[in-house]
Amino acid sequence: MQGQPANALQVVRLQSAVSLQTPHFRTGARRIDASAGFGYRRRATAATLQARQRPARMLKLYDYLPSRNAWKVRQLLHHLGLPYQAIPVSIFEGEGRQPAFLRVNPSGKVPALGLEDGRTLAESNAILAYLADGSDYLPADRYLRAKVHQWLSFEQEQVEMSIGSLRYWTLTGKLPHRDATLVAGKRKAALRTLALLDDELATRLFIVDGRYSIADISIFAYASRAEDAGLSLAAYPHFRAWLERVQSQPGFLPEVHPYSIDPHSGNELP
Ligand SMILES: N[C@@H](CCC(=O)N[C@@H](CS)C(=O)NCC(=O)O)C(=O)O
Image (cartoon, rainbow, N blue to C red):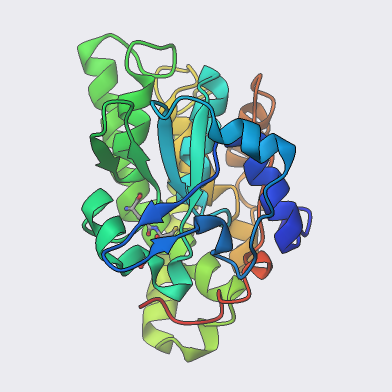
């Protein structure tokens, strides 16, 4: 189930461990200290003051800790050893729908990435493909790259839309308020997705070409949390073995932040 519980203070510490600057962004009317996103304000310590003096030209990750889509990006940044500034966006309080953030990502969702040159990029899998370019996490071969994209699309359409939705509704207490037919359909799709992955992983170690890539990172994000949505993994031994292989990758990021760190997560999204 969910990983170690964390309170708001721990969130600050976790974010600070990877972020190198005090996060904030401007909206039309007011400057938001994004560290206030979960109702806390970070005091300026010597460390944060020192961090503020670091150069602004750094990757910015617009983040929401419980988001597994955002975890994908955190994971790859960690693998690549890329420093970045984490900017928490309090999505349940509507920060994602403010003009300043809509200029970063018109869909108002996290994750989004601010590049060193000021351009922005949204959609977790597009961000993975961008960051992984030229690295071991995205094959150079044209066909294998396309295979990675095949599985990234599969992840969005079949993993996130079934397991991801069910998990989100379950962990934030929204499941009983969802249409029963919709939930049953998602459950069926989730089980079909797990069975498909189990079949595929019966014959190779990783999703594409037997080598760990961003396809594994992307699918792992939500598929590995299927039990959070009450989906048993007992019938999928090859899938479970793959989960272990992913978890034993050097630099694997085991963090799973529960929604309970955000007092607003029981709200409906705006
Ligand atoms: N397809 C997008 C989905 C992003 C997404 O759904 N993000 C959620 C958090 S996991 C969000 O920011 N929701 C806020 C909203 O919908 O307003 C991706 O892969 O990045």
